[in-house]
Image 1 (spheres, rainbow, N blue to C red):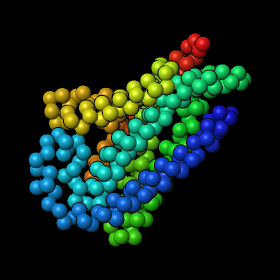
Image 2: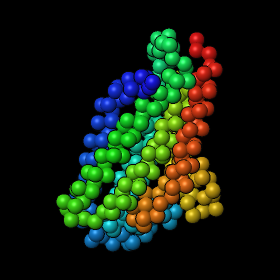
Image 3: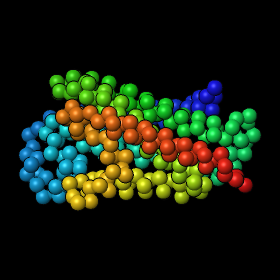
Image 4: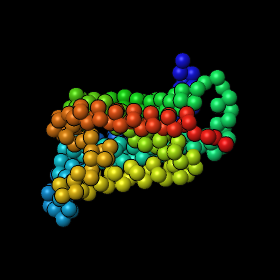
Length: 261
Protein backbone atom coordinates (compact mmCIF):
# COMPACT_ATOMS: atom_id res chain seq x y z
CA UNK A 1 0.00 0.00 0.00
CA UNK A 2 1.02 3.60 -0.72
CA UNK A 3 4.04 2.59 -2.79
CA UNK A 4 3.40 5.48 -5.19
CA UNK A 5 3.03 7.96 -2.31
CA UNK A 6 6.29 6.75 -0.76
CA UNK A 7 8.13 6.94 -4.07
CA UNK A 8 6.84 10.42 -4.86
CA UNK A 9 7.47 11.48 -1.27
CA UNK A 10 11.11 10.47 -1.56
CA UNK A 11 11.35 12.53 -4.76
CA UNK A 12 9.98 15.51 -2.84
CA UNK A 13 12.35 15.10 0.11
CA UNK A 14 14.71 17.77 -1.20
CA UNK A 15 11.75 20.08 -1.83
CA UNK A 16 10.63 19.56 1.77
CA UNK A 17 14.12 20.25 3.12
CA UNK A 18 14.46 23.40 1.01
CA UNK A 19 11.20 25.00 2.10
CA UNK A 20 11.80 24.04 5.74
CA UNK A 21 15.21 25.72 5.74
CA UNK A 22 13.87 28.78 3.89
CA UNK A 23 10.90 29.16 6.26
CA UNK A 24 13.10 28.72 9.34
CA UNK A 25 15.54 31.35 8.10
CA UNK A 26 12.77 33.74 7.08
CA UNK A 27 10.97 33.36 10.40
CA UNK A 28 14.14 33.71 12.47
CA UNK A 29 14.98 36.90 10.60
CA UNK A 30 11.70 38.50 11.67
CA UNK A 31 12.17 37.33 15.26
CA UNK A 32 15.58 39.03 15.22
CA UNK A 33 14.28 42.37 13.89
CA UNK A 34 11.14 42.38 16.04
CA UNK A 35 12.59 44.64 18.78
CA UNK A 36 13.13 47.45 16.26
CA UNK A 37 9.38 47.50 15.47
CA UNK A 38 8.28 48.09 19.07
CA UNK A 39 9.55 51.68 19.02
CA UNK A 40 7.69 52.61 15.85
CA UNK A 41 4.43 54.58 15.84
CA UNK A 42 2.57 52.16 13.60
CA UNK A 43 -0.72 54.00 13.88
CA UNK A 44 0.79 57.06 12.23
CA UNK A 45 2.91 55.05 9.83
CA UNK A 46 -0.06 53.20 8.34
CA UNK A 47 -2.66 55.94 8.78
CA UNK A 48 -2.83 56.65 5.06
CA UNK A 49 -3.43 53.05 4.07
CA UNK A 50 -7.00 51.91 3.27
CA UNK A 51 -8.76 50.54 6.35
CA UNK A 52 -9.63 47.25 4.65
CA UNK A 53 -5.96 46.68 3.86
CA UNK A 54 -4.79 47.24 7.44
CA UNK A 55 -7.61 45.04 8.73
CA UNK A 56 -7.15 42.37 6.09
CA UNK A 57 -3.43 41.97 6.80
CA UNK A 58 -3.62 42.68 10.52
CA UNK A 59 -1.03 45.46 10.19
CA UNK A 60 -2.27 47.26 13.30
CA UNK A 61 -0.87 44.45 15.49
CA UNK A 62 2.70 44.72 14.22
CA UNK A 63 4.01 46.30 17.42
CA UNK A 64 4.52 42.82 18.92
CA UNK A 65 6.49 39.79 17.81
CA UNK A 66 3.28 37.81 17.34
CA UNK A 67 1.86 40.58 15.17
CA UNK A 68 4.98 40.88 13.05
CA UNK A 69 5.07 37.13 12.42
CA UNK A 70 1.34 37.09 11.68
CA UNK A 71 1.70 39.70 8.94
CA UNK A 72 5.15 39.17 7.49
CA UNK A 73 5.60 35.42 7.88
CA UNK A 74 2.10 33.98 7.85
CA UNK A 75 -0.20 36.39 5.97
CA UNK A 76 2.36 36.82 3.21
CA UNK A 77 4.72 33.86 3.51
CA UNK A 78 2.27 31.08 4.40
CA UNK A 79 -1.10 32.15 3.03
CA UNK A 80 0.18 33.64 -0.22
CA UNK A 81 3.69 32.51 -1.16
CA UNK A 82 3.66 28.96 0.23
CA UNK A 83 0.05 28.39 -0.83
CA UNK A 84 0.86 29.50 -4.37
CA UNK A 85 4.02 27.40 -4.47
CA UNK A 86 2.17 24.23 -3.47
CA UNK A 87 -0.63 24.93 -5.95
CA UNK A 88 1.97 25.54 -8.67
CA UNK A 89 3.73 22.29 -7.79
CA UNK A 90 0.49 20.29 -7.68
CA UNK A 91 -0.59 21.73 -11.04
CA UNK A 92 2.26 19.78 -12.65
CA UNK A 93 1.30 16.42 -11.15
CA UNK A 94 -0.93 15.04 -13.87
CA UNK A 95 -0.57 17.66 -16.60
CA UNK A 96 3.21 17.42 -16.41
CA UNK A 97 3.17 13.63 -16.63
CA UNK A 98 0.85 13.75 -19.66
CA UNK A 99 2.87 16.44 -21.40
CA UNK A 100 6.17 14.59 -20.89
CA UNK A 101 4.70 11.25 -21.96
CA UNK A 102 5.69 9.66 -18.64
CA UNK A 103 2.03 8.97 -17.91
CA UNK A 104 2.07 5.97 -20.27
CA UNK A 105 4.68 4.11 -18.23
CA UNK A 106 2.93 5.00 -14.98
CA UNK A 107 -0.42 3.71 -16.20
CA UNK A 108 1.24 0.49 -17.37
CA UNK A 109 1.83 -0.43 -13.72
CA UNK A 110 -0.77 -2.62 -11.96
CA UNK A 111 -2.25 0.38 -10.17
CA UNK A 112 -5.61 2.04 -10.81
CA UNK A 113 -5.70 5.56 -12.18
CA UNK A 114 -7.43 6.97 -9.10
CA UNK A 115 -4.94 5.35 -6.75
CA UNK A 116 -2.02 6.61 -8.82
CA UNK A 117 -3.27 10.21 -8.85
CA UNK A 118 -4.47 10.09 -5.25
CA UNK A 119 -1.12 8.88 -3.94
CA UNK A 120 0.72 11.47 -6.02
CA UNK A 121 -1.32 14.13 -4.25
CA UNK A 122 -0.67 12.52 -0.85
CA UNK A 123 3.07 12.85 -1.47
CA UNK A 124 2.67 16.59 -0.90
CA UNK A 125 1.95 15.82 2.74
CA UNK A 126 5.70 15.42 3.28
CA UNK A 127 6.67 19.08 2.64
CA UNK A 128 3.43 20.34 4.20
CA UNK A 129 3.87 18.40 7.45
CA UNK A 130 7.61 19.00 7.58
CA UNK A 131 7.41 22.78 7.35
CA UNK A 132 4.58 22.98 9.88
CA UNK A 133 6.38 20.69 12.32
CA UNK A 134 9.81 22.30 12.22
CA UNK A 135 8.99 26.01 11.87
CA UNK A 136 7.14 26.51 15.20
CA UNK A 137 10.02 24.86 17.08
CA UNK A 138 12.58 27.10 15.39
CA UNK A 139 10.51 30.23 16.04
CA UNK A 140 9.89 29.42 19.70
CA UNK A 141 13.56 28.67 20.35
CA UNK A 142 14.64 31.85 18.53
CA UNK A 143 12.12 33.96 20.47
CA UNK A 144 13.24 32.45 23.79
CA UNK A 145 16.88 33.09 22.94
CA UNK A 146 16.12 36.77 22.28
CA UNK A 147 13.82 37.09 25.34
CA UNK A 148 10.79 37.71 23.14
CA UNK A 149 7.28 36.50 24.01
CA UNK A 150 5.63 33.95 21.75
CA UNK A 151 2.75 31.80 22.99
CA UNK A 152 3.63 28.15 22.21
CA UNK A 153 -0.01 26.98 22.22
CA UNK A 154 -1.10 29.64 19.73
CA UNK A 155 1.91 28.81 17.58
CA UNK A 156 1.12 25.08 17.52
CA UNK A 157 -2.57 25.69 16.77
CA UNK A 158 -1.69 28.05 13.92
CA UNK A 159 0.55 25.47 12.27
CA UNK A 160 -1.99 22.71 12.84
CA UNK A 161 -4.66 24.79 11.07
CA UNK A 162 -2.16 25.69 8.33
CA UNK A 163 -2.08 22.03 7.24
CA UNK A 164 -5.68 21.93 5.90
CA UNK A 165 -5.16 25.37 4.37
CA UNK A 166 -2.08 24.26 2.44
CA UNK A 167 -3.78 21.01 1.45
CA UNK A 168 -6.64 23.07 0.02
CA UNK A 169 -4.19 25.21 -1.96
CA UNK A 170 -2.49 22.09 -3.28
CA UNK A 171 -5.90 20.64 -4.18
CA UNK A 172 -6.61 23.73 -6.30
CA UNK A 173 -3.47 23.01 -8.31
CA UNK A 174 -4.26 19.30 -8.49
CA UNK A 175 -7.75 19.79 -9.93
CA UNK A 176 -6.41 22.17 -12.59
CA UNK A 177 -3.69 19.64 -13.38
CA UNK A 178 -6.38 17.13 -14.32
CA UNK A 179 -8.87 19.39 -16.06
CA UNK A 180 -6.19 21.36 -17.98
CA UNK A 181 -3.74 18.87 -19.40
CA UNK A 182 -1.39 21.59 -20.64
CA UNK A 183 1.10 22.00 -17.78
CA UNK A 184 1.73 25.74 -18.24
CA UNK A 185 -2.00 26.47 -18.44
CA UNK A 186 -2.67 24.43 -15.31
CA UNK A 187 0.04 26.30 -13.41
CA UNK A 188 -1.20 29.71 -14.54
CA UNK A 189 -4.79 28.84 -13.62
CA UNK A 190 -3.80 27.54 -10.18
CA UNK A 191 -1.62 30.53 -9.32
CA UNK A 192 -4.15 32.99 -10.76
CA UNK A 193 -6.97 31.48 -8.72
CA UNK A 194 -5.09 31.84 -5.45
CA UNK A 195 -3.90 35.37 -6.21
CA UNK A 196 -7.41 36.52 -7.13
CA UNK A 197 -8.99 34.91 -4.08
CA UNK A 198 -6.28 36.41 -1.84
CA UNK A 199 -7.07 39.85 -3.22
CA UNK A 200 -10.81 39.30 -2.78
CA UNK A 201 -10.30 38.35 0.85
CA UNK A 202 -7.89 41.20 1.57
CA UNK A 203 -9.28 44.12 -0.43
CA UNK A 204 -13.00 43.63 0.18
CA UNK A 205 -12.87 42.96 3.92
CA UNK A 206 -15.09 45.41 5.79
CA UNK A 207 -16.88 46.50 2.60
CA UNK A 208 -20.27 45.73 1.05
CA UNK A 209 -18.53 43.10 -1.10
CA UNK A 210 -17.01 41.22 1.83
CA UNK A 211 -19.13 38.17 1.01
CA UNK A 212 -16.96 37.60 -2.08
CA UNK A 213 -14.15 36.63 0.26
CA UNK A 214 -16.00 33.50 1.36
CA UNK A 215 -14.76 31.68 -1.74
CA UNK A 216 -11.15 32.30 -0.71
CA UNK A 217 -9.29 29.62 1.27
CA UNK A 218 -7.66 32.50 3.20
CA UNK A 219 -11.07 33.40 4.60
CA UNK A 220 -10.98 30.35 6.84
CA UNK A 221 -7.67 30.90 8.61
CA UNK A 222 -6.59 34.12 10.35
CA UNK A 223 -2.98 34.05 11.59
CA UNK A 224 -3.43 37.32 13.50
CA UNK A 225 -6.51 36.10 15.36
CA UNK A 226 -4.71 32.89 16.30
CA UNK A 227 -1.24 34.15 17.15
CA UNK A 228 -2.13 37.54 18.65
CA UNK A 229 -5.61 37.05 20.10
CA UNK A 230 -5.59 33.32 20.79
CA UNK A 231 -8.84 32.92 18.83
CA UNK A 232 -9.09 29.56 17.06
CA UNK A 233 -11.39 28.82 14.13
CA UNK A 234 -11.50 25.02 14.04
CA UNK A 235 -14.66 25.14 11.93
CA UNK A 236 -12.66 27.02 9.29
CA UNK A 237 -10.05 24.26 9.33
CA UNK A 238 -12.78 21.66 8.83
CA UNK A 239 -14.19 23.63 5.88
CA UNK A 240 -10.74 23.73 4.29
CA UNK A 241 -10.33 19.97 4.71
CA UNK A 242 -13.73 19.33 3.14
CA UNK A 243 -12.95 21.71 0.27
CA UNK A 244 -9.61 19.96 -0.34
CA UNK A 245 -11.31 16.55 -0.29
CA UNK A 246 -14.00 17.69 -2.75
CA UNK A 247 -11.43 19.15 -5.15
CA UNK A 248 -9.22 16.07 -5.02
CA UNK A 249 -12.22 13.78 -5.47
CA UNK A 250 -13.34 15.80 -8.50
CA UNK A 251 -9.85 15.49 -9.94
CA UNK A 252 -9.75 11.74 -9.31
CA UNK A 253 -13.12 11.19 -10.96
CA UNK A 254 -12.06 13.23 -13.97
CA UNK A 255 -8.69 11.46 -14.25
CA UNK A 256 -10.38 8.05 -14.01
CA UNK A 257 -12.63 8.85 -16.96
CA UNK A 258 -10.48 11.00 -19.21
CA UNK A 259 -9.08 9.82 -22.50
CA UNK A 260 -5.31 10.09 -22.54
CA UNK A 261 -4.17 9.99 -26.14
